[in-house]
Amino acid sequence: MIADERDTIFSRMALLKGSRFFEEYYSDNPEKFENDEMLRSLPGLGSPGCPTYDHPGSVFTGGVFRMLSDLIPISVGEPHSDPVERDPARLTRWVKGAALYLGADDAGISSIRPGTYYSHRGRREEVWGEPVEESHPFAVALLSSMNPSMVHKGPLAPVMAESAMGYLRSGIAAIALAYVIREMGYQARAHTNGNYLVVAPRVAADAGLGVFGRSGLLIHRVFGPCARISVVTTDMPLLAGVPDPLADVVKSFCSVCGRCSMHCPGRAIPEGGPDEGAPVSWALDAEKCYQAWRRMGTDCGVCISTCPFTSGIDWEDLERAGIDPVAHEKILLASGGRDLPRPFDPEPPLWWR
Ligand code: SF4
Ligand code: SF4
Image (cartoon, rainbow, N blue to C red):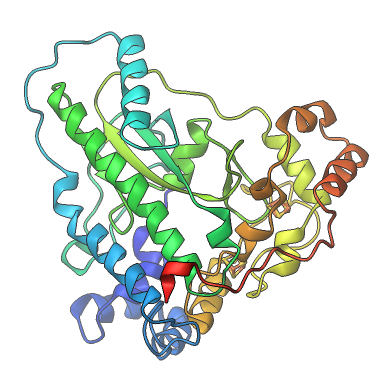
């Protein structure tokens, strides 16, 4: 399925009231108007009117997101020379190594396929509605882990600072990687928070960096869902990775677990078993999730905090368990069980106040 970025809740919230795009969007999608107006009436995420606003720590988050926005113009550029190295195996080793050296915690490569790129752009007024015309054949996903001790403070303000830092770290690594790929003579564009032309979690899953769990988040073998993703698309000839073969095993584990659904303050994560006939096993209700964010004033993170993969699951045990629910019950029990209270820590870090 090819997604249109204009339909995402973030793009809708970025529409300026009274603008041509605002009128155009809601005349085509009148059923979204009432809900979106209600959300617009609430204080913006991380803004002083939010119930979780916490000065001066919250100001830090705003500064990091503003910096990410200021970096957008340097996400693109022209190749610096003609390509010299053309061997895909050598270039793949080089690109992955460069991504890690530039600060990513993990990196993987995927081939672009239908559904990797958005059909149209939506996040920023100046490019709103533009068809996505870039068609690079490869994408490099760069993953930056977040600090679980900060995420456990969610939905209080520090979780959003950590989220911003995850986007900043992966974003800076992606922008720098695009620079060095262009230096090698190839085209490259960095896709960072607020400036994606691609659906980043799909790129990462195709590249084998993780699999989707019940919460709709990508689960990485080391960091679980506690990570953020940026991407570089390129025409450099690379060797694509393969999706993680344990997708069905994680699906089976999530069927037994369900902690994220139980703790979700927005009731946005489905309960019960997977929907076997559907394109995704559990469809996150992104609208309900975002409504909860706006009510609380942060990007929450409770599903990340409560997930056993954030505290660490042994993937060898998981592989041995296969899709046996009894074995999964044992693994879940070893990580505290289904009813373990989530590790909430309300204290901000020492520097925060
Ligand atoms: S971020 Fe919060 S509201 Fe959204 S799905 Fe996760 S737990 Fe639910
Ligand atoms: S909390 Fe449990 S059900 Fe939810 S994604 Fe993590 S492992 Fe799956």
